[in-house]
Image (tube, rainbow, N blue to C red; front, side, top):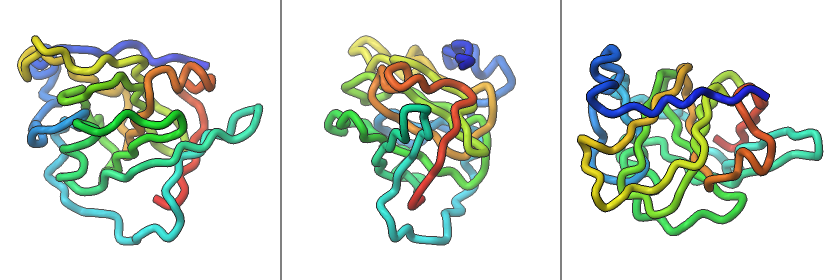
Length: 177
């Protein structure tokens, strides 16, 4: 499977690269940062089934039980201040539109893999992102920008993607979202 090229850039470089980064969403954990966040449209349906992200792997499906971050407030908080995730748990960020939704690790206390998902596949992946360091400031904290637009972003424990052979192009099924 292909692996995404690193896209770690500082905030200054991000702005110079075309203004992808627009507004920082409040104070919180691993949170999205995009210029397209003006939309407040939310999905119309409330899921009846528990939300899951399923990777149909050769050895059988790998199911991630997810907490949903659908509203601007939920996306701003993200996993910041959250207890560590279980081995098959994650958070799925749901946006109204596909866009290059940028994320950072502000307020995180444990490392993550972050996957951007669009059209039933992983379109970008960042591996083993460390939690925020005590010396980081908003001006120096790395920002992670996908190379392709996506409507969904999945955060799981660091090492999850590698342990399950998941990379860019891997198929993904969303259930109860």
